[in-house]
Amino acid sequence: MRRNTRKRSKTARRAVGAAAALAVGAGGLVAVNIYASADETSAAKGSAQNQVLAGGTVSTIDCPDVGQQLTSVPAQAKAQVDKELALLDKQISEAYQRLSTSQRAIAQDPNFAQNAIIGPLKDKRKATIDRIAIAIGRVTAKPQGLDALAACTLRATGGQPTAGQPTASPGGNNTNAGATGNGPVAADFVDITKVKSNVRAPARSAQASKGSFVTKCGVNANKLYNSDNVIVAPGVTNGAHHVHDYVGNQDNDAFSSDQDFAKAGTSCQNKGDKSSYYWPVVRLQDGTKEFDNDKLGGGAEGNTGRILTAKQATLDFVGSPRGKVVAMPKFLRIITGDAKAFVNGTANANASWSCTGFENKVQLKDKYPLCPRGSNVVRTFKFQSCWDGTNIDSANHRTHVAFADANGNCATGFKAIPQLVQRLVYAVKAPSVKDNGKTSPFYALDGFPEQAHKPITDHGDFINVFDPKVMNKAVQCINTGRKCS
Image (cartoon, rainbow, N blue to C red; front, side, top):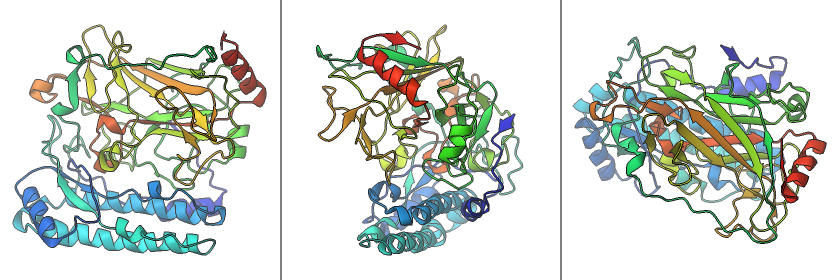
């Protein structure tokens, strides 16, 4: 079982990672969901929420996503802001852990969760958000209104622990440590044969770039895993709070620099593609104790069960339905989907689940598919295909790239780039939803612990480390209508 080797010589980066690493035990977690707003913090509402918890309803912690509100961060403040944003995620995970191990206290005192967990969490978040504003304010105008994002709420999900996932004791010594009903539930699955067709594609113009470029980088058969995210939380160990599969570049962890990427090896057949492609692993919740069963990002944060390696992973770059594409800049970062969509809402969600034989008819956003016998589960990511022409990243990791509109056009000021279409196929038996996975266990994404393993939180990450000559070849193939690899 291979994990990335930490670059321990980078003392400053290591210190940041240590400061922001999540310090929770391997105790159990309860299922949780989130949809918070700053005006939902009254004592009456908090009391009502805690009364729901005391009644035995599984719940989650809902906090506004501060990072998505920061569309402009000066370069001089970026390292400090990244560190503080990672700390906000750490605070939520710790509060969620406290919620999961306080069920007896909540049952005895309906106000316990609000007073002992949600209130202190708000105070910690406010202090952290203040530091973010101060860091930005040292360089440019101090952002206003961020304090309104400090308050979090409790929200009942109505879900129940799934079969084979008993509620853990605070010691976390059960046979399936960490898996204590924090998702998924039977309602997260749907029989794909009963879903109406919902796939539509924009019409191509005469000027469309109709070619494609395929890069073959394997399925992570060498089992390169970690729970970092160098795009969102650079320099922070366990910044993702869930485990990723990695294909392509073999030197991706929280401490990787562009220079590290450029020098690294690659799993891609074309050695001119050292790009990094990564996504959250899928696990079969069958009680298997993986290598990370008691570790952060794994079982200690509710991500348990047997990690499933995709039987097939295809990475295609395709053109624009409206015209030619231009080359991606080297080290361009793109995130598609939202790992916190269950909390944040669907504005940035881009999950697409289906089954082989059904992909041209049905794509599911907020459900896992139950595939018929002989059909496999498919995850598809269509990445943003419009670039602002200048930046390889942005403060919230989104505004430098965008999706084309319904007709395939990029917004004014944006240029069409090759669109990465990533397709992952899994040979996994349809779970038995009628008995809550007892006969045939549920499968689910890894995710932030408070996201309840919801399918809508699926997401993919890409860092372009193509040799410019290979990228230019890809663009030429796409623009001239050829299929290349």
